[in-house]
Image (tube, rainbow, N blue to C red; front, top):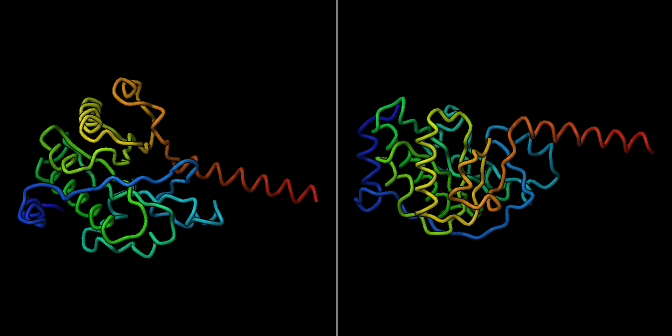
Length: 225
């Protein structure tokens, strides 16, 4: 479990400054990519013959499936080499149900991990945005270059007001080129972001449906021979 010491230690990680590391804007194409959970790469291999060209690995998975990244940020480096791009980790932040220091610790750890991946991995990195209330915005959205492609998840949102206010602040500060989105898109998003720039990430259910259709098409081809 994260503690207040985690916040202090990680704040000093970059030049003793109480701020997140810099995340730079990269341009890369995400049209027609398959977004697959990091804990189910085998599914990606079933969906495409070329995961390197077609798959984006995302970390919107349960914390227990990615906690190894807290001890070793580069634990999945070999896996990342097999895909086109990755999203940075999504360590939980929940202002409604946990102490602010835990939110800040998890957000900052996620930002540090994202920065290391961008510096040390060849694959494009999509910055996952996670936040709590307004007290977390410095760590959540600070030092992100304008235009950066980001990812968010609306799945499991417990406080719509906190989500909306944080997302609107992120859009104002970052002005992201594209926004990769997991889950339903609330109507209010169109008030401050161009929906045409949103790239919908497939849910696990949608991926399994894709696989089912592929197998059905293959069977039809076999019957036609």
